Structure formats: structure tokens, C-alpha cells
Image (cartoon, rainbow, N blue to C red; front, side):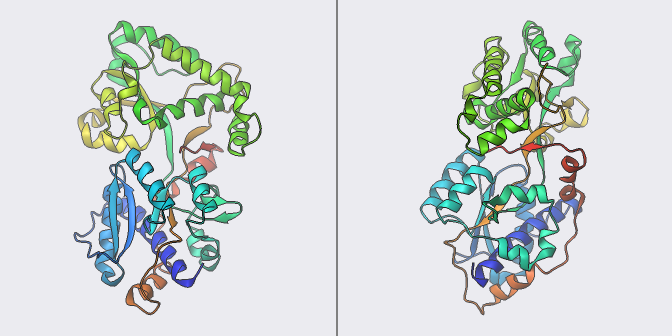
Amino acid sequence: MNNLKLRTAGMAVSAAAMSIALVACGSSGPAGTGASADSATMWGLTGGDQPVFQASIDSWNKSHPDSAIKLDFFANDAYKTKVRTAVGAGQGPTLVYGWGGGVLKSYVDAGQVDDLTGFLKENPDVQSRYLPSILESGVIDGKTYALPNNKVQPVVLYYNKEVFDKIGAVAPKTWDDLMALVPKFKEAGVAPFSLGGQSKWPDLMWLEYLVDRIGGPEVFANIAANKPEAWSHPAVIEALTKIQELVDAGGFINGFSSIAADSNADQALLYTGKAAMILQGSWIYQGMKKDAADFVSSGKLGYAPFPTVEGGKGDPANVVGNPSNFWSVSSKARGPEEDSPGVRQGRNVHGRERPKPDRLRSGACGHRHRRKARCLP
């Protein structure tokens, strides 16, 4: 990768670091971007960390008007389609927001993103900001193509304490406990689970957790490695059977296949008391704090680990979720001339000392407790 690209990568890392730092400091950042049509571009997701990224880029652009970054946000599901199409056509953003994993590998195989390995070797201070286990999700075939830009995002079982209290229930600790709650909530006129089935990816959380609880982490490791017959493992079949049994029992709200997670409709069913539980990522907590502040502040929101499965090989402490989201640098991106002020600014960005706030270090919880995270697409 050429020096210009290395410095572009520095911008990406800096933006991520500033984003995390601003979260810790509680700063809203200055207004105004100063970006132009020739600026580097960055795409992100609406909701969640949107205010954090926006404040970070606003601050960067104010301090570096000659190397401004143009930031645009898209809804989750729409973004996944848009970015794959754009990157595939060589028209993606300079800084590509992603999840690592298979999609990142497809970019790498097509030569659409730059190898950042050399950048990390030349800038060990940047590499030292992250846990090795988190950085690994941006590695393809031994080379780094993506760097973390936010926090560890576990998937947990959220529940409405007020609804639970009405039927005298407690959060389920086992799969049998979970199934036993289904008829009780249905009798009370409450859907046991909300689910944004239209978005499809929330469905995967159920499969990932059950496969891990039943067969242990090796099952999905074999699937990720594309080993023959990996999807036919007995743990996968049993997990799918249990999900079907939950559906047949009426465990999910009626019409779940038409509910979109992008609109936060799935979480709204929880805090309005129409559903008792939802299996979702930590990112929805921010949405509920905004849309249902009283529900959260009054202590009505509960959360618990995913239940164990009797006879399962998986560690009950294992957690499904996103190790982080990531920035990659488009191999098609072209920046300003080598001697421009913007490039000179970018050259020095990654050399600045930046704090390691608690939200960044929070990724260590999985390491300290030896929990393993499954990566969502």
C-alpha cells in the first residue's frame, strides 16, 4: 500500500479513536463539517453511535479543513445492500464501515480494500490500543484489512420487568424455563418474544446462541472455516429444531416476519409491554434510552444471559455479539496530492497520543472472563 493510503488509514484510526474518546468525555463536538465534493468519504449507520461519529468528524474537520471527511449515514439494512454494491462497483466510500468476517473477505478477494498490516507495524501505538482478540476480526489470511471503530457489542436477553412481575415470572436460566414461560405470557395476552424478522439478521442470534450452547464454539468455527458438512452438524440440526418448536408454540409475536429492526419496532414492542422479551444486541439500549427514557430510568428494563441447554457442550459464559465494527480503506480511493496540507495533516494524525477510555477497554471483559464472542454479519 502506498504512503498516501497509509496516511488515509491513519485518518480512519484517528476518527475511531476520537469517536471513543468523545463518548468518554461526553462532548457533543462542534458543528459544521467543511467537507467538499473532493473530500474523503465515510459511511456509517443511523442510530446507536451516530452522534458520536458525527461529533468526531465535525471536530476533525474543524481542525483540519484542508483534509475534511464527508460523513453520511444510512439505515442498517439499506446500508448493507448499498455498500456491497458500491464497493463491488469500485465506487464505495474512502472509509468502509463493516463487521469483518465473510463480507470483508469478499472485499479482500476482489482487491477492493487495502492491506493495513504495514501501517500497524509502522505505528505500534495504534495497534496497542486494541485487544488482539478484537483486532483478529479484521484479519484475513494473516493480514489486517480492517481496524476497530467502536466497542464490544454483546447480544443479551432483554426483558420487561413489569410484564414479568404481572405473572410472577423470573428471567429464564435454561431452555426449558424459557419454553415454560411461553404459554404463561400468551395467557396474559403478551407475546413472549419480539423479533425483527423482516431484517433477517436478528433471527441469526437465536441460531448462533443455540448452536454454541448445544455443540460448543467448535461447531461455528468449522462453519466459518467452510469445512465440509459443517452445517449438517447435529448441534445445528438440534438448534434449528428448537427454534421451530419455539415458533410452533407461539413464542414470537404475530407477524414477526414483517417487523423491521431498522425502525426500532422490535424494541418498541418490549418497552410498550406488548412483548415480554427480546434477544438483541447492546446497541438497542441506546435506542431505548432515547425513545423510552422513563422505561429505562425507572428500572423496568432487565437483561440476562442466554439460557443454557441441558446436556449441551457449550460454556454458559460464552457470548454472541460483535467484537466491534470496523473501518477498511478502499483500494479505489484517491486522495489529494502528496504535498497537500490534508496529506500532511493525515501523516501526523496517528502519531498523537490519545486516551484509552473505559468504553474502549470494555472489550477486555470478554478476555478477562474467557468468554468467546460470535460475530454477527
